[in-house]
Image (cartoon, rainbow, N blue to C red; front, side, top):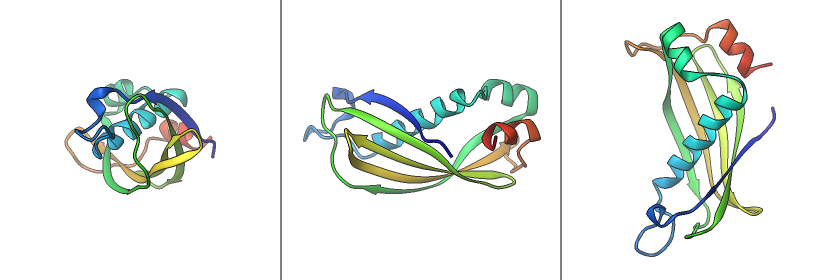
Length: 131
């Protein structure tokens, strides 16, 4: 499946006292990558919630920190769908500075009802994920 890329710049608010990106901010960076990927494939999460009563929630993250990012670095978040199952899907994500990988993650996303119960993907949403 195709890799979606999202570019961002590291701001002062993203760094710790040592001037490197605070570890938890990588999770924010990859969330932005996933959110933009959802838009890019034509999915409207507000409509999904309003029309189908379902939302995406992060169920599990497996992360590896490889090298630090610093203030003013321009980063690329790569997002790729790796697996789709009945009530969840898995994304592989990387954060890079130029060609250097800084962070990798495997993220499991669950599909939940507004009442907090797992549910299967509706056919039209599955079609957007697996064209």
